[in-house]
Length: 428
Image 1 (tube, rainbow, N blue to C red):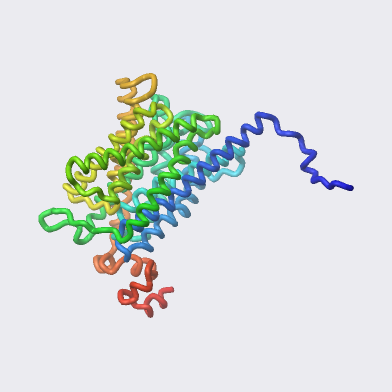
Image 2: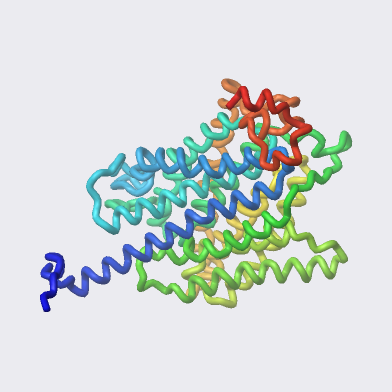
């Protein structure tokens, strides 16, 4: 009997060091795939949280975030974020990279997913009244400039140098501020420039509920995001030998404790326990633990989750009181949870609890990211509004953006009476 063997069989056996490198690369790639899956979670939550006439529009924004956001991040953003950073403020190499190691390619892929996540956070907040073209310009700015610069401060220097916040000892392991607060601050800037949806507030300022059309989608999106968050946080170790079990446990504990706190608070106050708030509060807990998931004990992960619940409820009420219309309360989730979580990472640092110096550094990082992200976000959205326009016409808002922006309906069998089939066909 003759055995035929491929020539690769005779290749040199990998060393232990090479095998360890392959293992780390695989772990980072898996983490990146899970972060990519977050886009599906955000899409479902946002789609279910808006009226059926705007479903396609929301799904399109989430889908195209990945496309144009990933491309501009590869061309420009990755270099600004991770390139050689001698100043501590911005990377200066690895633009449009062509020659990288296996791990460097994996790092680029992983960070590309993070950039798109930061952009998507603003999508839901501005839903049901933003022009698709204006939104895409905002995504390009987020993934090409706003997120990469902030990331360079806290995580920069992958190819040399070190970010100025890192030098100070700033802690944001996986992005409570770098990703989530940045996205939340951009969402806040967007809803300020856009203004509220028609009918969202009564003439006397009283908030009016504009209910989403499908809480099943919201719930499924919440489960998907929760699952993907394990890759978001544990993948940020960039090594399979990191403290993966503790990171995943802390991540989960923060989410479940946030939800439990909400159930208790609602029961004590005799308020309805809303599914929409339950999902959002779980996300706020996950946002909050993202900064300190690797550096705090499980007990403090629970405290962080409870604090995230309180932060979400406080910011949500504040937004309503000042008549700011956030269609999915992304600002409450990502600013409320992100700011609190970044502070909690300093407060509850294992082995050095309640360090005044560490807390000051955390506050400096929070403030710097607010000034950059919110300030530049206001400029970007204001310029878009004054040039091509950011908000759709009132007639388009009333008819629904699925029809006016995309000439498609998510539920055509039930929407035939709302749309002119001849007009839709002509626009195809």
